[in-house]
Length: 365
Image (tube, rainbow, N blue to C red):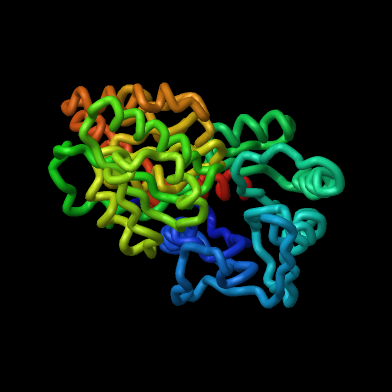
């Protein structure tokens, strides 16, 4: 991709850990000759990370340090911060000591951009007060790169005086878009990929799928991801329906395209998902995508009635109706599949890199 010309800029990203979708974007930014890129991660990996450690690029570094856990939150303490001066600093995540130091110190010396998903509602009690205090550090930023339209609207309300840029997640979809099968097949296979937990709405999907089977539809459900709460969730599902469900377990990222190619429909019924990169992957694999309206990426990547549909968060009946509409009209799967492949052309890492370069250019000018 030919990038718009910008003045030479030194850019430093601070991120939590080397996630594949962020690394795809960083690699594309590093290819721009007008950008001197440096990336620092607060840790190389975490115990529950779905991503195996991979060799780092020359511009990527791990900061020495440690972390403490509090419930689902992880607070990082890093040291030996680099002394090199950057023109722009981009920070991902504010719920840790390291980023707080950068926001409250470095942001006064260098333009800082906070890059984040939609902020979740504050917890109650001490934890809620701590979250509010940590979030106040974002007032020191030059601007905020919101991950998706929903996050952009949220940050515009919280920080009305700051520039807010909409820069979603972009990842390499090439492995997902190659060697695509003919769709739809009989029976239709519905795919879910993610942790088998209530927040991801797996119970909602299981109940909707059971409604399909009990209504006489011929379909399969393919589940990919960490088992977590799945055994308990399946206890309420009749044996007739369970026979139509395949659980493939956790799969490393390089194996995921194989499972996406086995599917005809993709469903992400999360009660809450700040973004949901699996939606990018499903679109790259040419799948119609059905999401709850609690999924952040749905508002940027799904055109309802074209490459997928939305349903109200937690509504089993409407999800079942949407699935039935695809099973009753196989041509609808073909049309939506083509639309998803067309949409995937808009969400390549090269497109994401250009968005970032436009922001850097604006700051520099």
